[in-house]
Length: 138
Image (tube, rainbow, N blue to C red):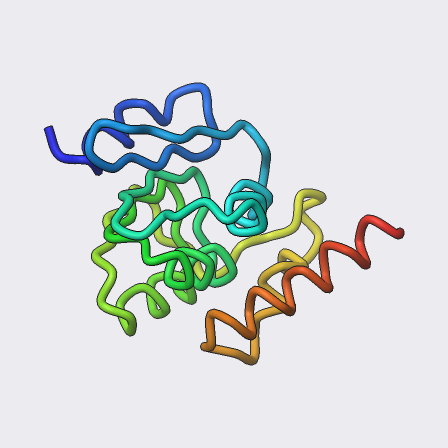
């Protein structure tokens, strides 16, 4: 089995599964939190394959920043598909959607809004850190 096949198989019960050479990392945290935490903790994710429940532009930019090799998404946004495609990251998905909606179902996800005007992974990471910080402060 490939790393991506292992990640997809092990996604059950998690929000994200990253695999490389038999080593898998998991999280049950929602949204972009797992990727933000892996990056903040200095985890080297280069060459990993990822299976994720929801991949929007924000997550896709974090995958590119981290050197992710390939992606599977249960739900993928058009923006996420474009970012991955533009950066040569192969992606497969179950459902393609126009955009990622917030948890209340009332508007576009705030993380997607934060990165709407950038295609730069480093800039996206900084914007997402600011947005998460502002949301935590309420």
